[in-house]
Image (tube, rainbow, N blue to C red; front, side, top):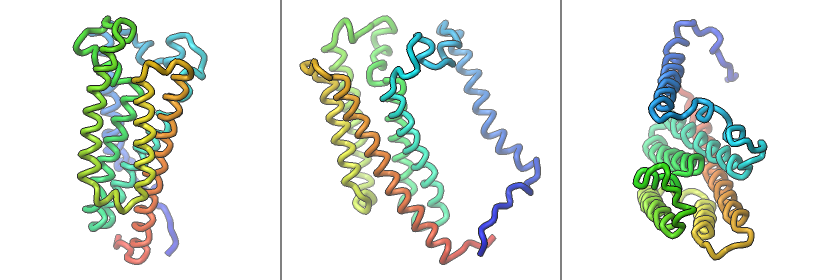
Length: 239
């Protein structure tokens, strides 16, 4: 059977619900950001412009971090896309949908933490915007970051325990290696005794971890999608 798309014949009326679902939340987000900028007296320039432009730095500023954000985003997209593809097979849907959806949320949270430095900025909720903890009290900052990572570890433990049956069927060695790289990055970050090459060592371990995370979920999701495609070829759905 020849594969053929037939989207061009869709009536304009069919596009309206999709546009409403996409553009309305986007518009609400823009309005919300504008309101917050007024409430907290933050210029829209700071909220919309590229960070390097705002601080007057060259475009390569935060190179490692930006590459990491792109890789996190790739993994999250792969997980959520594959999760909804499992709906084409009921047995696969029951078995893998929750795993892939939880993986998407975990990856998204790691992405947001990396993008907005939540583990370093959340003390602002307790000490205020002008606390400036890293410079004033590095020990306290390490303690607060440690508490944040404890919550991380608990969530990851529950994730691994709950989905242990699914993970055993995958190339879990890559997942274990990713966690090792992340642990080494955190250990270097919290070790103030490392003076030479502290930043490059910490960020290199984290980048290796993100890449390995992407490899693991790419291989897992591709295996799921290939099996789904094979099942659909053998048992094509009626339209």
